[in-house]
Length: 155
Image (cartoon, rainbow, N blue to C red; front, side, top):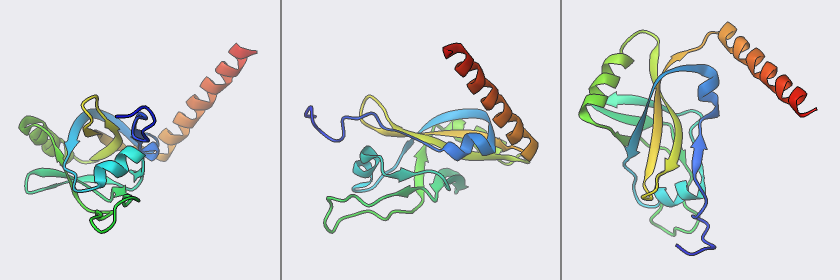
């Protein structure tokens, strides 16, 4: 790649709502099956994970409601923005995730998308349990306390 390429920047797209709404039990890294110009849009950082979730269909894991914006430089062969995208995991990991996700209160959430050192798009997914309102309040209190300590340290 050239030095002034727009794809040279580090891609790390996060689902900011996920850590606030869910308590992560376990995390996994999965490959993604992409079509056409989707990788180019990911490299530009035009992805939204805020409303996405993972689901099992026929024993395979898919991510739903992930929005990858159409690539601006593509003419007629552009991709569909919202569709089910297959996630690539090992057989044992899939079986473990499927059994754990059937437990009450556990769900599979996409946490972030990144490009690895080989140039492949990967997704970090987490097995999470939904937080209650009082848990969210407690997290906000802890976050504010840490911020206050940082302010005191710099003054």
